[in-house]
Amino acid sequence: MIYSMTGYGKSVLQLPTKKITIELKSLNSKNLDLNARMPSIYREKELTIRKLLASKLVRGKVDFSIYVETTAEDTSTQINAPVVQQYMAQLRTVVPAEDLELLKMAVRFPDALNTVREEINDDEWKAIEAEIQNATEALMIHRLDEGKVLEIDFNERVESIRTLLEAIIKIDPERVDGVRERLKKGVEELREKYDENRFEQELVYYIEKFDITEEKVRLENHLNYFTTSINSKDSNGKKLGFISQEMGREINTIGSKSNYAPMQQLVVQMKDELEKIKEQLLNVL
Image (cartoon, one colour):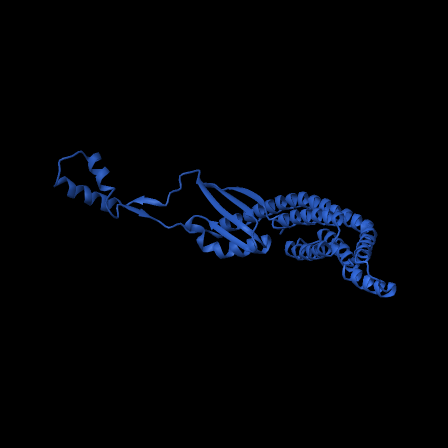
């Protein structure tokens, strides 16, 4: 089971005087890169929120937002009546004007309005924290759905590499015979007498240098390990990335040793499939 790092989660909390919307968006990243946006009243809880999200989301470039919409008469700004009245009295001595016009001017002066800082109460925070959990769960469900799509793609490409490996194993005897014939023909064209036994010894030594038995076995093991890791309980994109690097190492060695055009063509196809796996692994949690 694997999770993608791409996901979206949303939860809405309706309180008596306001509606709070919590959104989470996640993209791929090597580590957890969390960007939090929220009204100043909730800033004191930012560290708590970050710890909560880090424990659930593990990795990814995450945008976390809290939006507040007032749905009733609930304002933290009040008119400082005594100050406004003093401003209006002073203005009357300067210009003759109606009270309404004086009021419009007075409220623009310093200290005409008092802003009372809101305090978050425990009940409200508990409700918000629960909704953050809900939004996080929604994002993880989205990640799991994306992961299932990736899993199907990985399995198809691993099987494609396995099929290409079987084709390489099938034509390997042809490759060895071809190498043998080319060497023998090259020696015969020299029109020199040579020791058959010595030629066979040198031929065995030369062919052993191009033997790919170990690479075939290791690549098969890496393919099996990759499949097992996909089906494990935990999602580990970094581990899958390491396995894919080992797969690439064996494929490259087979290509460098092949010295046979049909086999090299199969190796190129294997590299193409592996490259697509690596690209998709960047999105795996």
